[in-house]
Image 1 (cartoon, rainbow, N blue to C red):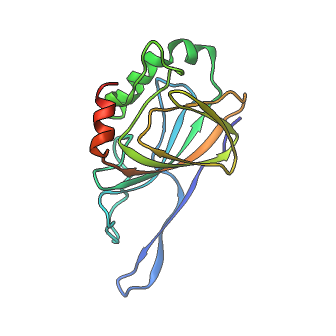
Image 2: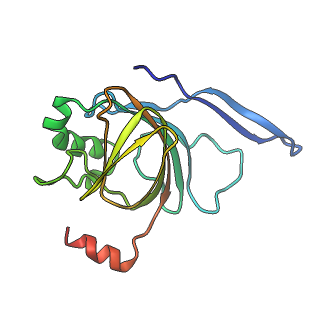
Length: 192
């Protein structure tokens, strides 16, 4: 199932302070992940700090794709997730490591021989994930949860994967906030 392109509208300020539309159209950065066929990242916006600068600066999505937001920043993207395939399940672990390396976070892959899914990963972020269309299964270390359009997941730096067992593409919206593990959680993760 082909999902429609994403339209992005950006507002800003004219020299006299009036609110104006500064851009309206297709996203300039849409990246199919070479190592995970069918997975497409649609980069919408990114901020470099909190509080975020309110300015008329250049588009922060231009340039190389990176997974996590900048330190103290945020990132919003849509991700198209294809149905799990036999090839993905058989070779996903190796492909996931390569995919994460290609977007600057090789350490995000957490796959081991006993992982519940070959695409297990973890980032030091708080992610708001919204299922926009389709169905997806959130896979955690010891459980799974089926999600449908309209469901929201608050992912707090946990080890997880997204399994699409529906037979149709799923589109999710993610807002990622840079995070910092509390010391006791960081210690518990050091042994994993």
